[in-house]
Image (cartoon, helix red, strand yellow):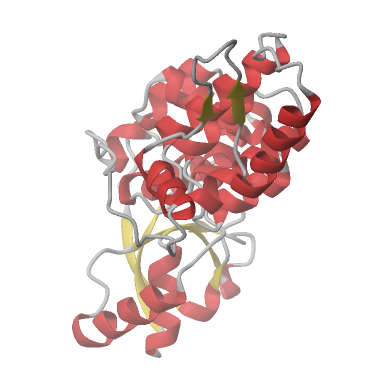
Length: 297
């Protein structure tokens, strides 16, 4: 799903971090004089996309300047700069063989540097949910900003900020799935309601393996909560049927219930599924077909 773009520009979002009289100065800065940004929220860079950007830079140059601040202004003979925004452009410029890059020189404190780096990435939709949550958490913990303050600064809602930070409460194994693109924030967020880290990791793996949607993930979380609250369905008393149900659960990797009726009334077998994709996979297994071979629901 495409995220709604930010409605304001970078300058509008961080206008309070700059003195009123300051005007940005455009420089052509040697690449070797630019130090990495310690506030860069992004940690994953797609090498194929970097190569594509490098090819575009060789052809057209850098259209949008990077943003830097002074790194060591106490030594005028050896001025260096610290990158604030534009790390993809800087990395691609190195791949393209450029010696200098255009940059806007800004006078920013550490909080302003982090805000600008974060907002630029949010505007470009370059961050995964974990990177975004960690950057927002830094604004909250290191700079004492409330969730309301952060939301106002980056052009998002307070629930958006709170939910992004809370996502970091998930186990590292689940966060790694999000960073690798295997799991979306919408699929992972329902797992926060589960009772233990083990249950969260198990559910996350099931969601990834079965291709379960965010709505299906909510159903899994609801089922776990129902069991935790003692509302699990009553098991049949017949030990043979219990053993059969457990065997089917292991084979099908899902909850199985066998309902035995009295007299000549027919019994039934109930199988859980979480969304249309999961139902299709279940139908394939029951009909002895390869995954994806059954007709789509």
